[in-house]
Image (tube, rainbow, N blue to C red; front, side, top):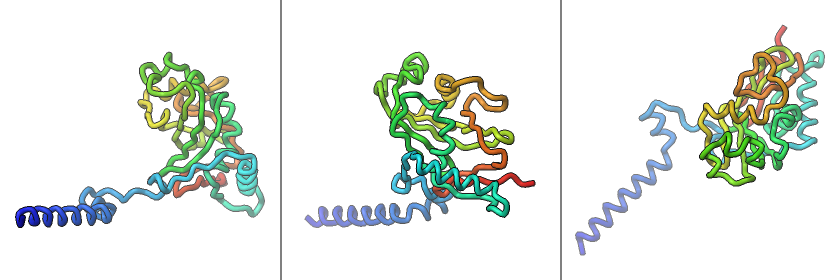
Length: 220
């Protein structure tokens, strides 16, 4: 009996240690591995998927135009859903025609856009190969990447990650997949892993992080 109690006591202590380690995981991870605690916006509970709406596009349009106003700000912060609704008005011509329930979120330093699409829009098994067997005929696809200004008036959304449901595609497959949905000739300077975007000439830089997308005015 006492041996049993001793074992139960040891088990209780082990559980307490494990609980303490879990509650202080950010601090000891930083000390032991030299890494940084998880960034804001990377935990599932921090991520907010915002719908792309006409109202959001107008809010972003107003913010962007303010950069061109005399005496206007040198940068503006926009919500993921708002800026996506604005810039993806152009990218919508690049997204699959079957895309529905399009939403956006900032995760870490990337902007993610997800939508419900038909697998056939991406070439189906011909492009995805065996991976097509893991997704439905109509399923959720998620793009993650960053905006890059290539020259005045032209930018690209550089796709760093594509997921079908929770299945991440290998990086070499991304250009092949984008080639299926990219429409028209690829402008000079746009990579095979990017979607071209027309932007105002006065936009000089776009940065993503802390749950928002920041646009900077071109410096003289």
